[in-house]
Image (cartoon, rainbow, N blue to C red; front, side, top):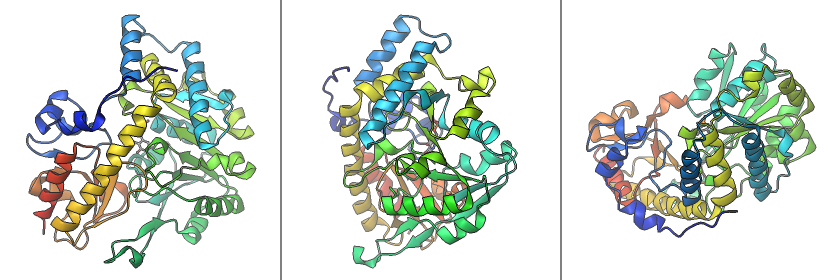
Length: 396
Ligand SMILES: Cc1ncc(COP(=O)(O)O)c(C=O)c1O
């Protein structure tokens, strides 16, 4: 396990200006006009974990830029299983398969590991590719809107959270259907409770369906909430689940190209064994992705905890600022992820035009299957969160 050099994450991040962030060259800031706020794609402005940068420098110095060697694939499997143990899930490393990304893994699931005639059932709002990838795999998509349950005990009607509409999900499922369960949930910010997950499990079992459990945001579970891996809930959930995860969100390394599928059912294991060699190699996992992933899972816990503390403080700061600047908007409580989900239906603003109007470029909820909402990436320096809330206030 690598020691993690001390780094003052809050001071480092607070000092980043829009100009610094543009100069860094990432997608989020270079895809918006100069001077505007990049709050779209799920990248973080926080520093990389020193354990990751050290491991990557070392790998580059060794010229480790070829194809993925078996020892690194095994290292990813061991490190993934080790990380999942933190959530109380005992994963056999033999069940962990590196894939180029979680979305690549999802495609493999749809194209090779599940019944091609069965539909994909997706609660919406959802992470955007889940709305488009099923068609590319020739699969029928059935979207099921989640329910907003208001809890006015939160004060001034600002409570309220998304829940699954179980009867509607049950009605959409057929035997072999793939139900996409994202937890923590992008974009609503929910971290589902055991009771909610067990209720989903009953519906899945009754329908003889499959769950694709995307738990990529698990490392970004906010303080006060607990991530429970779905497959770890019971023998029944393990038997009907294919898990997808990655260090890419928690440690901000999606560009390195390494996610993981976790297979816990005999049918998925057998289907995996029958795959062609290219697909079995995960569709392009890179050695640098594997090195970064192993460093994150085995040496990045302290850095992650400091990042989550900064993100949680930013979430609270943004909520307070926005309540002042744009009280007609509703920001859902963020239990996990750094993606704020804003209900703009009470504001005279089309979410698609917010970027042009006030220079805050988030994701139009329409792309998530839910018009009237805006997804705002809050993983930015706190001074810029204050600016973002102020700019959104100009919509009033
Ligand atoms: C829920 C969810 N799944 C998957 C991904 C993409 O992961 P990857 O880059 O590994 O495909 C994201 C990225 O934001 C996400 O939010």
